[in-house]
Length: 474
Ligand SMILES: Cc1cc2nc3c(=O)[nH]c(=O)nc-3n(C[C@H](O)[C@H](O)[C@H](O)COP(=O)(O)OP(=O)(O)OC[C@H]3O[C@@H](n4cnc5c(N)ncnc54)[C@H](O)[C@@H]3O)c2cc1C
Image (cartoon, rainbow, N blue to C red; front, side, top):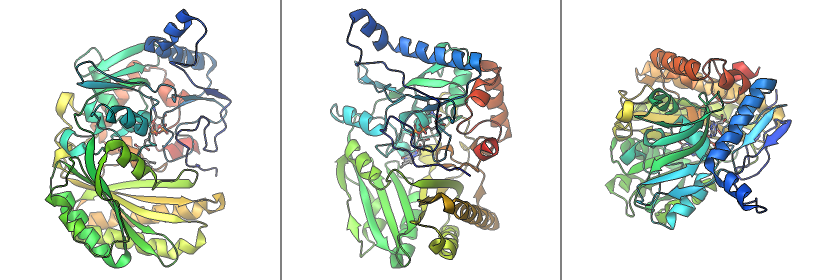
């Protein structure tokens, strides 16, 4: 089985193993210098939308499959590149335009968040996007989006004022909560790439660019304290706080925890105290930074170029359950660690509290199906390795860990079906996890705007409406 090579975000060629026949890079663009009228035409976002519309129509005419790629961080082969087809890289759709009144920011869908934040930092502004500088605007904004500001404003999908979208007809439209396409607006808030190609997103601007955060690493003897701090942070309901806690195997004998915590004000609140109280940290980068500095720092923990899998689950917040889940991860990894070359397994944990959930119903709601859920722990199995010969060992391990996690959450009566699309693996079906009626509504909306199934059949990459990517790939 061919597998995914972790993609190089700023690189102009696909670095997974797919070999597209055609590499298409629509440009808005500064490159064209020859004649003023040509430059004006190409600088016009409407023209870019037309170019992408033509591509959709050509693909329909020739039945040539295509894929769309923004930052290229989807964690499996073929999600954003098309073997023997066309791969459309949006990398040159990289405009960041602040409205005159500073209330909104229009962002080209090919940007990576680091570039967006570096432009906005200079103006004392930011937007609720990804926390890692190399991640793409395009993918993150279609699946959810947990930002440094998620507690105070909600997920990225709950903060998009408008989308410029090319639908299956090839026609560009503007999608807003109260406009002609309010059904599409609902669908785009988590429905993935099933409805069209987004040219730009307009986000509300946040008047701040300095926040607090960073990471501290600990040896395994501090895991119980880190677990307690994670649970206390998840239960605190402090709208400024968020956390990414990783329990990782660094070598045969070395097990570490990495506590990346964030506070969306220049100084942290009391919620971080349980973390600050843990002794014997191996490293410490906590401090006040700009959003782009923090995003660049976070990206240094995720090197490009490895094979990778992420496999997500969720459950209600509970310390005893969480301790069992960490133990399951640790003992299952222990059993096969030596069998996988250059193996870097981790259990990565975040949370969705009432603050984040409370924004899910605004502007007509979103399809994620968790607006009325209790607060959730989100945790995923993350594996990086470098040899294709080890793929099956890692896949089997992932499935074993996931099955034991699920059984444990069910035993405690705290399981959640929700699968966060942006952290899901090729073996998962996040759209079905949104619940039968939300899925049915997504399917209905897709049929209305895309009756021939262009974004199901001709653009097969990513999480589709009819099964796991793996079912569709095999
Ligand atoms: C190191 C790392 C850090 C991360 N940090 C965060 C985080 O802080 N918060 C969070 O919520 N998530 C985070 N994620 C998850 C991230 O949101 C997903 O991996 C997301 O899919 C990445 O988007 P992308 O544009 O980089 O990927 P891509 O692979 O380019 O795209 C992902 C999917 O979206 C589709 N797509 C992309 N752009 C468009 C478009 N304009 N129109 C239509 N379809 C499009 C693609 O076809 C593909 O199927 C992180 C991931 C990684 C690897």
